[in-house]
Image: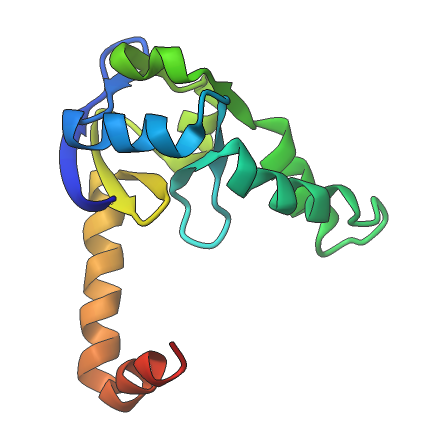
Length: 151
C-alpha cells in the first residue's frame, strides 16, 4: 500500500479507512485482527497486521519493568493497544480516547499507507514530519542518498 489521504474524525473519534487501502489491508491481515498502536518515535498511530505486530509485542513484553528508560515506553504502547477486527474495515473505525490523546488527534487526520502498515497522523504533525524530511534532504542530502545504498 502507498499513498496518503486526508480524513476527518467524527465527534466520537471514528474515521473511515480509504477504499483504496481497505481491500489490500484485509488481504494482508488474512482474516486476523489488526493492531492499532501509538508510535513513540513520530507520535502517530500505526495499524499493523497481527503477524507484523506480534514480534514487536514480544520484544516489548521482555523489557524489564524496572528499566527506567524503556519500561515507560512499554507501558504506554501496550496499555493503549487496540485490536480491530478485519470485518470492521468497511465501517467507521473508532479510535480509543487513550490512543487519540497519545497521538494528539483532534479532527483533521492524515491516513498514510506505508508498505504493510497504515499510519494515522494529526494533520499538523504530518506536515511537520514532511517538513523535517525536506529539511533533512536540504541540509544533509548525502545522508538521504546513503540511505538508499543500504537497501
